[in-house]
Length: 243
Image: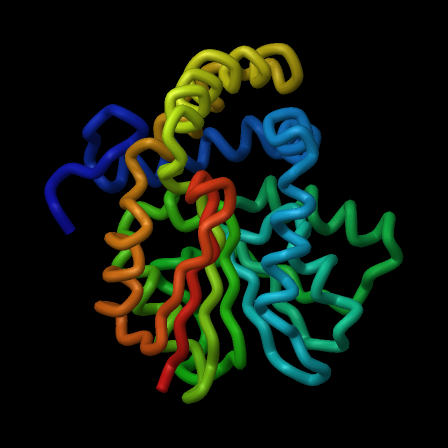
C-alpha cells in the first residue's frame, strides 16, 4: 500500500483512514437507512433489488455479505434459503442490523465483525461474496478484493455494487452539484452530521472509474468480469467469478 491513501479529498495515513471511516459509520449508523432513502429518493431500494436478482442466491449456499451492517442486502437474500453471514468492520452498524432483523423475525442470519482486508474465514468457505456501497470505504481495496477471492470456492461468484462516475452528459454536473452541496446538508438536517456526509460524497468522486475498478477485480484473480451501469454509471454492479 502507498504511504498515503484518500479520505475524501484528503491524503492521510492508512491507519488514520481506517479510524476516521470507523468514526463516520459509528456516527451515521442510527440514521443510515433513513439517509439512504432521503439521498436517493428511495431509488437505493430498487438498485438493491436489482443487485440481488443478479446474485441469484440459492438454497443452502453460503454467502458472505461484506460491509452489510444494517442488513439491507441480507434481508433481501434471506427468503432464498441461503446461509448468509453479514460482516462489517463497524459494530455499531451491525447492532443496527441485528435490531432490524429481530423486528422482522429473521433469526437465521449470522452477524460478524470483520475487516474486509483480513477475513477470519478459511479459503473456499463461501459460494458467493457480496459488497454493496462498502468497497470505496476500505483502506486497501486490492487487498480486500484478494481476500474476497480467497474465501470463495472455485466457481464462486463476486458481486459488488458501488457508486461511480456517470457518463451521461449533463447529468454528471447535476449529480456532482447534488453530491457536494445537497448531501452534506441532508446529513446535517436528518442525521445531525454534515461532515460525515461530506466525506461520503467526496469518497464517491475519488473512487476509480468503472473500467479501472473492473481491472482491479481482474487483478485480484477473478475471471469473466462484467460491469452493469445504472444511471449512466452513477451506480454500477460489478461481478466476477473465481475459476
